[in-house]
Image (cartoon, chains in turn yellow, blue):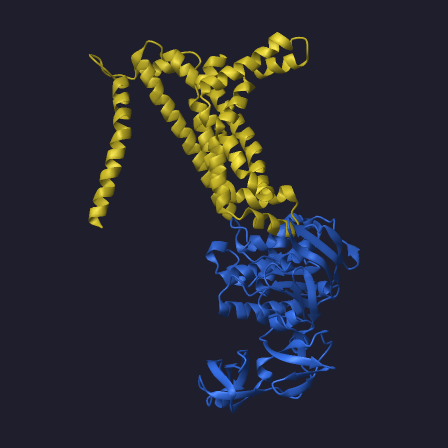
Length: 270
Length: 356
């Protein structure tokens, strides 16, 4: 047993080193300027640079919208799939995994082409206004659409694992024999038992949207990841400081989400 | 454990359930092939049959989870075939544990009342009352994973009764439980059902369960009703060869049929019921009706001790095996290999066309 423990600690230590050493090196690099000692200039510089708040807020809004859309799309679809057409599951799985195969560069090239139809072919139709609206730089909905597609593989897997753990059919039938309609059965009987899966799906989507660069950059919008790259530019220390900060921001957000999920669980016991 | 006045008022309006010509196919298999059946108000009717005979499909049609290809389901004379499941007024207990894992026992029972928008205080009180009815008054705050299988099914029963349904549906509710719990819960379900006087449909593949609990038993076979009768009649006067062999133990002894009587084991016995239009028949006999005497050309091949009785398996000269239940003290004389002879009582016997 002691031997096993030793092994465990050894592996944990190695894994920890692998993650923490680069992180610590980054932090040291940003705060320890040669000849000046410890200084937090790099960090204060971030906040004084314009666009920090705006880009972070935009990323958070995009993440929230993406999570809402992808869950509203996928949860009913996957429950219906499980109840009504279990044989279609492999098809849906393949379709949902496609975004993993298609590189973001190819994906964004496609989106760019479609967006050009607006000015080129549709400028005299009302649809043109839709194309303009989804590219509004204050809230580019086209990014939400792109992120929904990119999040599909992760959301599919998270929800699938959650649905496997519960007997959806029996839960729905039990709820319906207790006088619940379809929607009530879904919301009152199935969703509460998928809390973990929903939380996982949200985690993954949030992390994806906060870190996404390629699509946003190539479509010309400036959420957090794009802003980080733009602002760091040639200043080595600033760029590393921004990376450390973005890591912290993501962590804090994930912790907030986890805390939120955990709290609702305990209140439901009351 | 008392039944409240509310429960009793529900009992006075027990419902009649009718299945009319129910038919349902799943791809190539016919689950129901024209089922006609009436459940009388306040009775417990068991649907008995081997797996795949359509009994669960019939129950699920009454619950509203399954639609018939043709035929109607009537409750109190009203056609409910097109009524969605949540407006059917039928409480159901499932085979697998079906409690909502995120709710404690009390909230599980109160779930239906919450769907009906009953006020919190009222539904808590009612749920507590129901938990008391099933003997779990002190377990209300426990979650399903903290309850044993038997307790979970009791909570499921309380939940099914919470909305005072007109019909109670039990889909093999005891099959996942161990033998001892199964026996006590069986008695308890029966007691509750009689106290509440609620029309109940009980699906099972366990004939002992069906015979011991039900007012009437409906035996089903390949989507059709074979016989629907009180347990004693079903056992004593099975209408078909299938019922005879499915309910209880039956031995088949070859015999020859001629003008209304059958010659079997050197005896000539009258035929009970309609005789098939062939001469080569099998006589169907219950083990308790078979007499065994020492000496003869048959051999005892096995004995099984059942308590007060011992089941003796005898191989006749032509190779037919016959099972006989003898009082244990008599059976002591017949060890394996003993030479014996077998006789039947001078009573009308049931015959069936020979299958082999």
